Image (tube, rainbow, N blue to C red; front, side, top):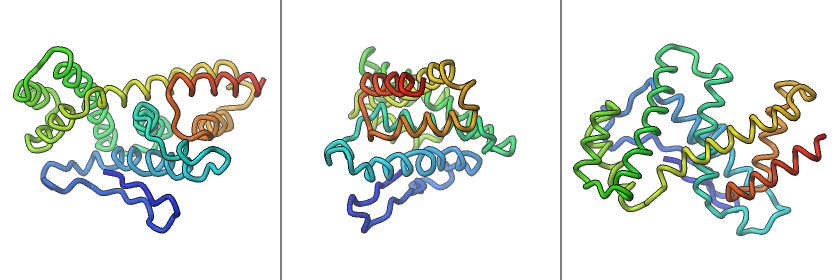
Length: 211
């Protein structure tokens, strides 16, 4: 769980490892979780958003879930792509996190579109993730009261990967891989959290400006 800093900077951002059931917290998944919650995930994105003094206050703090959580999932993928999952167990942790997000798409739509019961969703998630019952129950109860929130993660990540591929096709050869990634990430994060449709427009403008 990530608790953002106060807007005035008096309180730092804090990443809490979930210790309600320590035996269910898998050590080999902690790298991936840290990339999601801290750097380059939530902490980096939210801190940079707070610093954008050129945009209105509400734009710096508004929480568009698909953007914020999509960036955090993208950060997990980016860390793996860049070699920051150095051991086979770290890699297993990253892949298990991918499985977890895929399962969440099923239970979120199962509950809210197919009218699954709480018990059906818990049982399906237990069977398909290998997670402990305490953690699964907490997750399912969260999805019950927040329709679509679990789907927002993956939708945001997929849009960011799509936009990166589009920008890379247009600019990657000219900028070089390292410079391209830095420039693309700057463009994504420069305006705070955005609806995905608006983000797409901004990235298209950025691509055109780079040309």
